[in-house]
Length: 240
Length: 306
Ligand SMILES: Nc1ncnc2c1ncn2[C@@H]1O[C@H](COP(=O)(O)OP(=O)(O)OP(=O)(O)O)[C@@H](O)[C@H]1O
Ligand SMILES: [Mg+2]
Image (cartoon, rainbow over all chains, first blue to last red; front, side, top):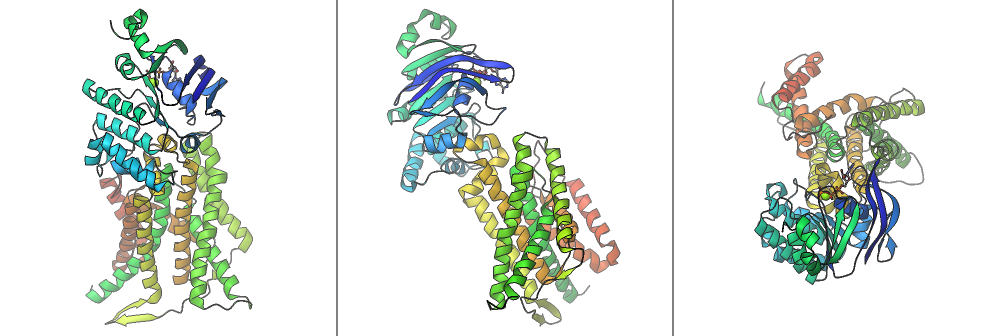
């Protein structure tokens, strides 16, 4: 479904990715692990090319999604026509809109009215708390609720493939579990998921496969249950 | 002041407030979305009036079509709104967007806007000359009087139109996805494309709304005061801008209320003081208001203002 090959990306003079290759198949839930500054966000931002300085410049390599090269596709088209949604680092919900408006705005490019109605229901099923806070301004939500909203919003884009950048950041452990359970649920309902995480424990618990990144390179990859038992991973990322 | 004069002034203030409010809406819409003070907007009002003049002449001055004048009036308004939108969008495409693409400091964009205004004024001067033109009478003026208070059909139309336009705008901004997108851009422009929304198209739509409100104000203005001259947008544009700031720029309710507030202050100052003092006192009052509440009546502080 998604195939990144030999990707080099830089911010001005700083080269952030030095030849990253990875793939995500339809129906999978895949994690991308790594420490601060490893280049995880850069990898996501290469798929969804926001205007600089947010997004890196791609020097070399390719990003194919269902056989289409995404390198020169603007972000709103990636979302609207290719069905990829991004839950960005720091959530970036629209604080001046209500919870419901945040979900509605994500349907901007959609015309499938009936499916949109079903999708609202699905989001409120997954996150009943959002239903209780529908009319509230989104900047009054707690951090966990904002993350739920960011995920719900990505789903409302009509996406079949959702990218997430550190969804667990700043959340209490039980909330992380709740969010990853929701992700898993989405995944079981057919949404392909590619999630960037620093918290390897939780990511490996829920993902099918994972990649490990260090200073702009993929250094390890494998099935989650294999990586959990890998002594290097245990030492570096699982605090064992 | 007896109550008759009071009510009479009140009605006049409502009419002037309507002009200011309609123009102020355009300033505030563009600022809300782009954080850009579009100083060409007063001249967009002037362009709207001139385009209205052009369409009115074409529609009345030929022998091929004979339309009832009220239909001519409505067509004039609509055509002028459409054509003026093209002018507003052209400014955005030709002048503002390239600067935005390059990530230019907003100060330069504001100066560009000022220059665009001057180009519109002087372009008009070059094409039509400095002579004043009078707008044809499309609506026969009828004056109603009740117990010493008079009001014309035109005044009523101006006031009603301003309120209807405001309600329509408010509905678009509050209820539609495109309106939500406009508000979202003002909060976090970078995240908007992640919702599948083409930001440039929303910006163009914003200029269409603002320019068509200015054109509406322009045609109504020359219907009430049928004189056109190239600099007609300058003073009224500045005043409407100040009205938008006093109301809280970026907030469309603020622009509306600010416009009427300015109308009221002007008319009532003129009722008590010699007319040469009108603007001096009016702006002093507004200055005091702003020093008490710098973000304007409906505004809130933003991290970035120009
Ligand atoms: N906008 C930018 N401009 C310049 N350099 C950047 C920019 N964004 C990231 N970098 C640099 O690129 C490298 C990779 O950053 P990236 O944000 O991809 O890391 P990350 O793995 O997401 O880290 P974290 O876990 O802290 O979010 C870092 O060295 C970082 O300093
Ligand atoms: Mg990151």
